[in-house]
Image (tube, rainbow, N blue to C red; front, side):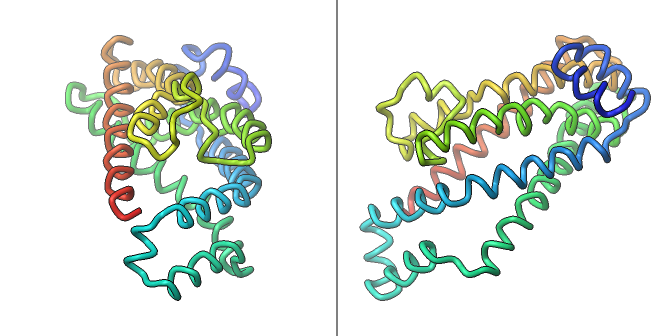
Length: 233
């Protein structure tokens, strides 16, 4: 299947598409599309992300006390007026970070699948995960950037269950927990189940347990990282 056929298939015919990918795991062209889209999203969202960071710093008495007045003000000034090098690094590091994340995630999912199956190869899982990310990195981020432009904020923008609780503080524990139930992420890991079922030669129910099991682990790690970071703010 060519790229356009695979792109359409992920959204409208995932079972057939991921079954075909398990037999011939294309990934390079799909990965390039995702990286370009993610880099563009990161570039457009960067000014609003920067404003969010400034607000967090300005609202944090802990950081001010820990760093001292001079260093604290210098850091805020640095965030407000990043150098050209910092801007370029932000653009360059976004696709690199996403690629590393996909490679590591694929390895973990591959390991989880091979626990109860002798079938499957790493490249098949990587191909399936890359294509499943069309859901989140193309459609999901397209909607998110529209919402970001409207709200003028990245952290206050969500496509998760948190959207039903608009009064929640985006730095609260409840918000970060609800934000893990992102609709596009849940969709992504749902259709990934078709790929894992074909790759590991297991039932769809078991494949979905692996897919959503990985989502659960990832969500718990995100919550833990948020909890640790909030202790310093």
